Amino acid sequence: MTGDEAILREDGSKVAIGARLECEGYRATLKYIGPVSPTKGIWLGVEWDDPDRGKHDGTHECHTYFKTKHPKSGSFIRVKKANFGVPFMTAVKDRYGKIEDENAGVITEELYVVDEQNQQTVVEMVGARKVNDLQSKVDALKEVALRGMSVYGTLESHDLSVLVPSIEILDLSQNLMSSWAQVAMITKQLKNLNSLNVSENNLELPPDPKLLLSSFSHIKVLFLNRTGYSWQQILQCCDMFPNLEQIHACFNCIEKLSSVEGRIQNVRLVNLESNKISDWSQYLQLGHLPKLETLIASDNGITAIQFPSNSSLATDMFTQLHTLTLNNNGISEWNSINELNKLARLEELRLKSNAILDLATPQTVRQLLIAKLKHAKLINRTEVTSEERKGAEIDYLKRFGPEWVKSGGSQDVNRNKPSAEFLKNHPRFQDLVQIWGAPEDSEMQQQSTSLKNSLITVKIACPSMPDKKVTEKKLPDTMTIQKLKALIYRLYKLDTEIQLSYLSQKMNGEEIELDNDQRFLSYYSIEPGDVIQVKL
Image (cartoon, rainbow, N blue to C red; front, side, top):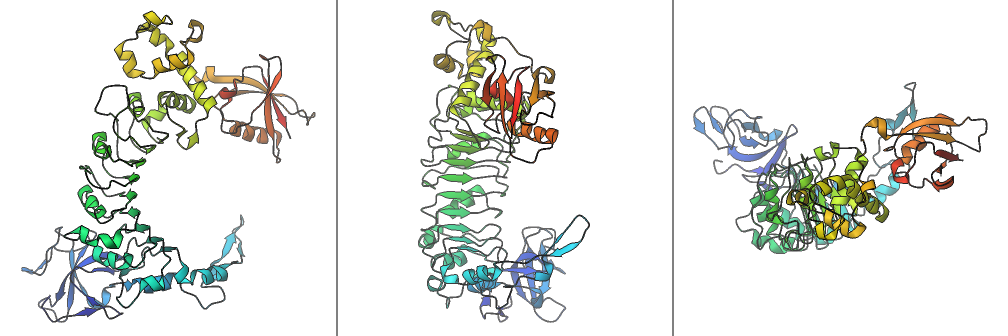
């Protein structure tokens, strides 16, 4: 900048070097204001967020006007092309203000449905006026979402503590704020605010983050997704939030974690989804957070889990952790699950889209997870009942009993000394023996897991429809009751609610209700020749 050029926003506020702007749908940071030889007029030198959008690095015709981080992220644009944003209250009023229109701004001509013949039918929008009336009372708004509304900050003349005093949840993601000081000018006035989302903003860290403590002391939930921050910068941000309980730092390309000693000690949830932290040892940096209850590490390329001690006893890390999410990773070995059993309070595990789930049928994998994880109450969002746990643990004893005996295990307490290798692979086996007793020889017969041997031939009958013949079907024992019902609906062409039960030959025709749609047929011990009854 040459010194006397001044760029003003529409509200009269001055634009300084470092300000954020939008141009033709792209965001950038202002690096220079002034002339560019040999042209006339004022130019803006900008560095685009997209490193390949520009033409140079701030040097034009051998003269350096500014410097960029990337060789082709710099450009010059005219002032009229730049949008430097709006103040906070302008965005609030644009988003929630009262619309003097019969349909509250809804374009009714665009409200229609298309039928199978591609004919359009106009539909009526009900309640838009009422919703707008409620939202237009901005002083009562508790949740405000201003994502992508080009907010640059707030004006000193706007007293937010009076204009919008009730805000508890604020989304300022993807806006034009350039520093945490600008964010602080907003948050310090919102005393009821407890959740702040500043994801997808390019915010310069203050030299001393602790100077802004008073502006963020009331906030408990912080979203820093897609900010481009390293883990160390995430921690620097957290230094401004003394009462933080949740940190969401997703999609930041973080590869390593550093020590959190003396920091984020009140945090109960850490969300690191979709980064590049593939080495489980990195997560151990969080292992001594005294209040950490939930850790989300999905989509990070994790292939194995191991704690420092080789002991099968509980680890002294993550002592309060009860929920662990590891979806979309590369975990493929059961030893990783054995390690997770060392977490003394782990009650919920989410493990979808990992290779380990493909090692056997879904039912078998679930049973193994239950048997290996002593405290699990929810696995992939499905409750583990006491009956299911009992069945899984007894089945585990039968399944691995022959291997246990071969390694030195015995029903004789004095001779029961399985090998160290067996105990490494099955650290809970001895505990299960103590709970349910050693498996009998007759119970340890290996069963084929082939599809052919897992099919059960049953009869399906509907007594209330005597004109329908009894049908014989071969069903996989991994079929859920819900899918069985769907099959019966198609088979009998039914459109009314049905209930299912079965008559057990083994139990002299006793009728047993199939009362849980999520259970597998094998859970109910249905055997070949049993009759499934359909009740309308």
